[in-house]
Length: 66
Image 1: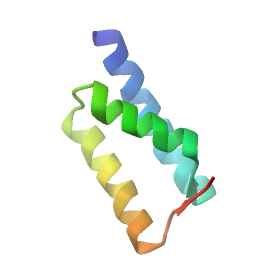
Image 2: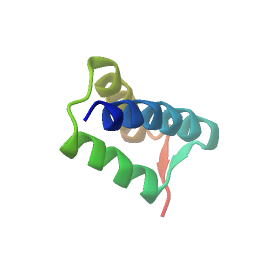
Image 3: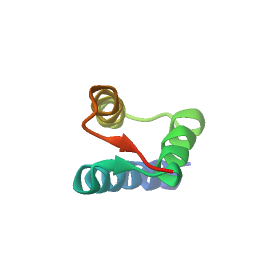
């Protein structure tokens, strides 16, 4: 299970960088985040990244792309 944990960690960091570069979160990225939250025990840093992205969506800094 350790290999999937590191996969989610690198994937979450990549999603975060991609979202800020494009100012949007794609539906595929949202699905990946949901999967990581539901299927894996994430560390505190990953939860913080996800919370930052959700806050940015609420504030209008990031858009949800279809």
